[in-house]
Length: 250
Image 1 (cartoon, rainbow, N blue to C red):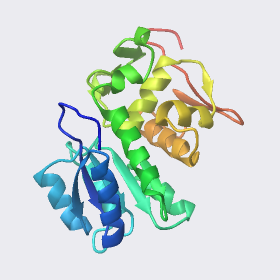
Image 2 (image 1 turned 135 degrees about the vertical axis):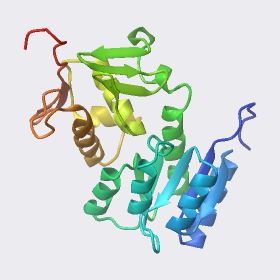
Image 3 (image 1 turned 30 degrees about the vertical axis):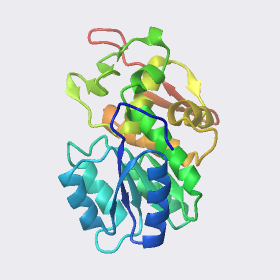
């Protein structure tokens, strides 16, 4: 039994066309205290999302009709689905499929065959970092709820980010990554450390970090091909270099 709580259980949408996998995943999630809805294809998933927005989606990559990649794209194209946590399932071990899933906006992924317990841990981790306590958990209290660097501003309490006054459309992990980098300007972080401190995992595919850095650059850099804010320190990792404020020296 899950621990007693006065809060409503998180709602999870499980999308998988394999009834056995969907049933096992649903059982483990429900026993962990989550409220679960199931969809067997992409169209049904989009319909359920529109009818009642879940708190997280467990999304199979290989679906009949509208596949998981297209479902994720469509979710991300809506305001309600912009920062919706998505954990993608893929039956393929091919790196290209994992990269595609991350490129279209998945926050995390699990490769089939997988341990249902591992999936529950991933779901719990993603929800923990997207819930009301995420801002407090993502860094030291002294960092404050608002972070600024040049014309970039992050409101950790509201989970909103702006550049030059214009709100940025960031996914859950993109927001976490940007907030973390703004807290540590000028510090070089290896991908392994970013995986641990932003994703909360001591293990995982480091290409997850690479893809998220690339996606974040596309949203905050004036020229993503020649980044000025998030620099690659070859052989080490990434460093955030704050842009000078308007009227400052370059």
